Image (cartoon, rainbow, N blue to C red):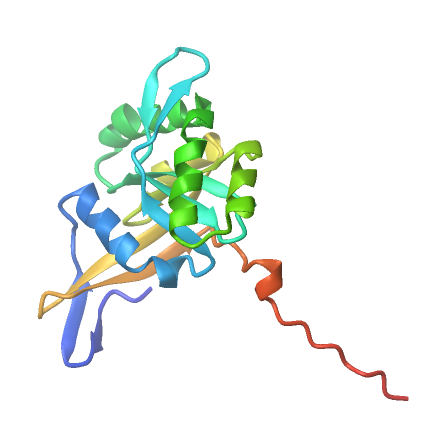
Length: 193
């Protein structure tokens, strides 16, 4: 794995991000590269758990450009195992148990504003979201908890350059929506005898 690199006279090295918000901002700023065929946006929508009626908040949302798939995203910074067990695991469990249908109208409005066709976006009302854990490093305990709750994982390692710029190194990407079918160019070959 790349731990450091040079680019345009700048030396990039691993950097611990102080806040989830800073990490979210880095992901959003680079979303066209990370998820080239999807709309990614910060989203603090509220779901209500089906078993206990608890409220839970999303951090972000990802919707494929053709609006056939969408994900509720929990963003976390890798910390101690006790933090993962006491804070992250319960949050992920609540999100997996939540009814997100109340936020679909807001999601549709956001993606239409980002360029999705209204007819395509409206199909999200009939599609259950999937779940994603977006983390800043590989952590086996987080990977296990994510798998237990049917969350896919995207891990992006932040690096900071000596001039103050940031870069992200993809470590794991279990979610990457495909381009819409109409955006794919198919070439037919003539049969040669």
